[in-house]
Length: 311
Image (tube, rainbow, N blue to C red; front, side):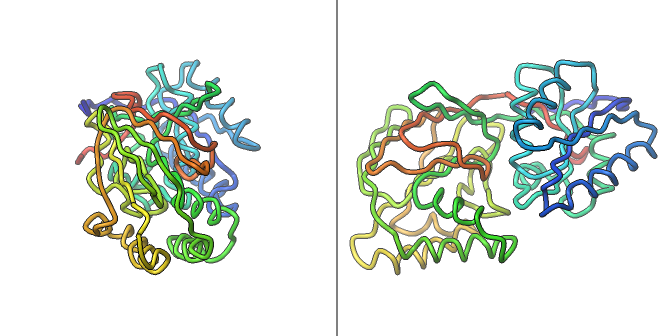
């Protein structure tokens, strides 16, 4: 898994932009990308989704066509729409990081702060096959994800952060976490990771296909996009000083050092099943998609993404 091959010179790409990325500057970044690709001799079709549903529809139509590459200008949520659209096709995804988190790009060494370098990856990069995750709910709804599926406190922090306009970047998640701590409560989970089962009062369960989410928060620091497995980070509810202990441990996810704390346990598997009472929110790639119960599974070799030749 994870093998790479050079695609040759890219002749035609379709650029899909999220105009709301980076608080409205996504369209300006996309315009620069279109010009940069044109300057490199690439024929470009430029699409702008009016909302997530429209962007998903445009991406699906593109992947059923004859474009060489679907280029996404946006963050992890936009990349998720693209891989959903490309799933089951041969269309590779190019990524121009222009979102809040950009953790797919971070995990694949795609330049985060150099648009021209990211454009070069689209034109001259290598095809890299990577795994995805899939979440399925009892009503049959399912969705693919690239980075992390978060549940419990973790997802509640994401939900609160999405509602905040200030501060920006990682600081927004820290402030959101502090606010969520005020209402911290235990949820009783029943969990299965492949054949291993556990039942306990937990703060959160995070399921990672990548090491990080939320702009570099190392929630599942040992995860790999090419091992056919999902990494699971479980935080048990502290028996004493719950808010204080959680307040001390949660910020350590920015460095990945939280996994050394006694309240944190890590596991790894192909399929994870979660129930909890009361029900917990579920977010994937920073977007809220439902609540538990749900089943999470690894989907090996599910997406092809253009990555640097140095990879």
